[in-house]
Image (cartoon, rainbow, N blue to C red; front, side, top):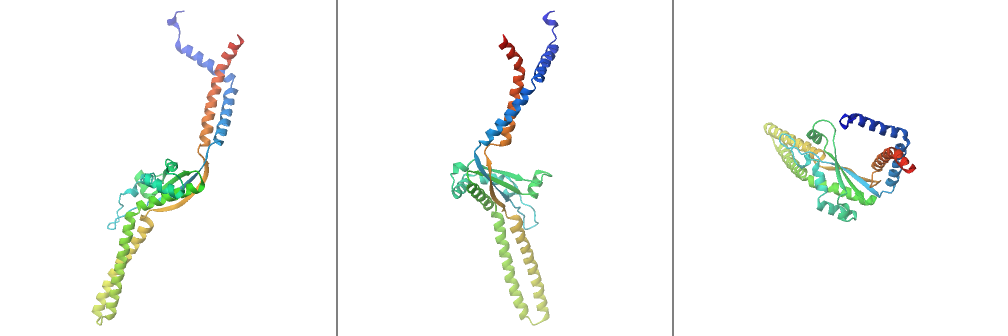
Length: 274
């Protein structure tokens, strides 16, 4: 038979069949490799460095215009703002100093995660559920908790400028309305004719309505619009190396070694016999 008559597909089928037969005949080698790999990965994960993870949940708030009540698109509308502020050099320095750490030890150990509703477009999720989890990894429980809580407070302070000014303005409006109410009531008590009393009463009603509206807007600004630390950090001990990942990776590598051993078993034995 000439070389042109050789069927490559047939040779490939023969090779694959031979490989499969070798694996089936030595099935216990891949299984043994998998078991050994899982055990080795588990033992490696036990030797991982123990660290503490502390997470705090920050509510970003939502800014609304006083006229029309339209939602304003500012830094609060973007959850990435939390990570930008928390990982800034000055924020890291403040948190590290308060926790008794070096800034270099905290740098790279701060992460953030948006908590969304999981439904609708991304912009709707941000508007409906502006929550961000801030996670800090530290060498001790206290250092991790203090650093996480400090960074959360820094984020809230940086994002509260608009709400704080709005709250102060509304409080001034309420106080001004109260001064008007007191003045109108004094004038109403001193009025003699019914017509003047009616005018004062009408004016008083308008000012009371304005004050009531301002009080409602103040509550909204304080409870809804202003960012806040929703949950303070509580640290939990963990390992720097993921146990699950170590077990999966080591088990997969052990399985591959087992397959290779099954394929090479017969050629190696034949070679040693010679």
